[in-house]
Length: 211
Image 1: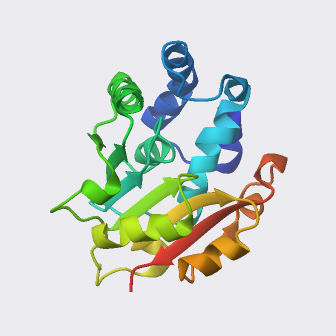
Image 2: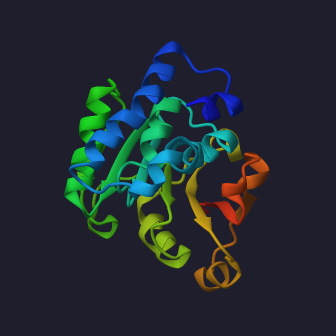
């Protein structure tokens, strides 16, 4: 928890309580359902929560912004972002229902009211659109963009990082070939330039606006 306050100093008392409760809740659920690698739990706040909040460090999700977390798994990055941006609306989608059960139970336990879940593949979602799609280490950028693009409505009031409109994803490694094959031209930010932590070397934040 201290690592979060090292980089973010303006949490409300409710946000502090919600973030502080996460590790014990995830540890408890991890005993029943393998949501997070057990060897990762010692670094829970750095590897999972702070990593998710790299998006919050660079983008501002305004009130009523509709955000979908594609392939949310155990809730990252969507759940920490929902705590950080209580006025935005988050919809976490995954094809594995038991992981979404964990997300729903943890959200309920900390009183998180701006988060919903859906057991589905992204390509099966119909008649619903979002301002932003977020994702962490789910699939190649080519596939993420193919699945996301039909779900993103063009927001005429969008203004870059103050009001993003497109796909924002967290990825690692050499992305040169992956970006080339995707046909996208995303903005690429180095996470270790956002948070000065060794764990974030070769980890990147990609933003592909909708055209």
